[in-house]
Image (cartoon, rainbow, N blue to C red; front, side):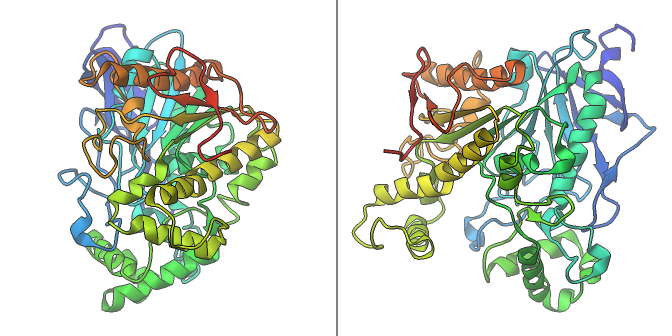
Amino acid sequence: MTRSRDATLVIETASGRVRGFVDRGVPNWRGIPYGRVTQRFRPAHERHSVDLVDARAWGAVSWQVQMGASPERWTPLYPDAVKSEQCLNLNVWTRQPDRADPQPVLVWLHPGRHMVGGNMPTVDPWVFAAHHDVVIVSANYRLGPWGWLYLGALDPDFADGSNLAVRDQLLLLRWVRDNIARFGGDPGNVTLFGLSTGASDVATLLGVPAARGLFHQAAIYSGSADQVGELSEAARFAERFIAAAESLAQTPSELVNLSNTALRYIHRRTIQGGPARYDPVVDGDVLHQPPLRSIADGSVSEVPLLVSVTSDEARILDLVRGNAVDERYARLVEDDGHSGGSRHGVGHDDKISLLSRKLYVEPAERLLAAATGAGGHCWAQVFDYHPTTSHLAGNPLVSGKPVHGADTSALFCDVHGCAGTDEDRAVGAEEQRALIDLARNGRPDWQRYTVDRPVAKWLNPDSTDTQTLGALPGEP
């Protein structure tokens, strides 16, 4: 590659040559293919091309599906985006692709409950390349039934079709390993990070044997290693899905030939009878055992972990529907035998505190305990702020509280050009610094979380100049 500025924007990769452009002063490539889907409900393959790929526009996102049973409450996230099963593409931002000193690499896995989301700009990864001089990658992978419907129990032709989205993510990480040096990144220093479902995907990959060595640090923001089921659960959901298809399809092979809009329609019918089941499963192939067990066995004890929660996670349920908190609390009392009393006589805020602890904090503690118990190095963080730049900041139902996802706008805040307040910028800078310290040095700058001293850094405007350590939310 020549040293001219234009030449640095055409790079030879395993996917073929890719042409980028300059995004606000930072070289950027969009929609680079990293895999190809050759058959629906089957594993994808590496993508090889001899053609020049014009990587100056966003690639197709996965088909998206309705997240709740009430269609009037669902707004598509990317109404104008191209949607396709051929959605295995990624974006790269890097300040200097032809540098001699390779920089740490961040790989972002997006949220969306495996039903919505993508690598288009609901967040702005550009800030990490522009202000922290790291290489950052964001990616699309298959969602909904395209990425998670397992039909192998109904038809042996689809026996290799478990955990398809996890297999997509493995293809992504292999692409990073094989190509990121050509963009100025260090393939030996890759930090995987995600929020919500994306964070749970990161936690799952900690337990995937084929992922070992493909990333070297991990940051998990409001995610869980617990959202992994059994193959039998995926099989039962597939039976529900086929039943909901009625005359449209009665066998897995007939589902293959349906249009994407027909699959989306069947999904809507399926969730009228119960929740969707689009989560990883222990299949004996991609996942040999639950991730927590692998982590406790020491399989990734060499991977430093940053585990973060917000201080009022479950208040996000107030945005789902008016009685979501009461329903979820009642289910907790019934299913978990919670000793805190009956369904009655407990205040709304107390229910939210308990749900935050059960749904978010305790999964974080289990992950931290498994990793540290196996000799791993871990750091815990509590995001205790609601930025004014958050899309929920003006919503009276959350009242500026640090709900689930409130940390997103701080994590991707342009601390030099943010339209928010000084506090927004200060908290954003601090949250980003913790991630960058993990990526560059293998550790944030506060005390490690251990079984004997389970401390967390509380992140709010009052803590940006001091080491504010405390217990995780809900602990005595």
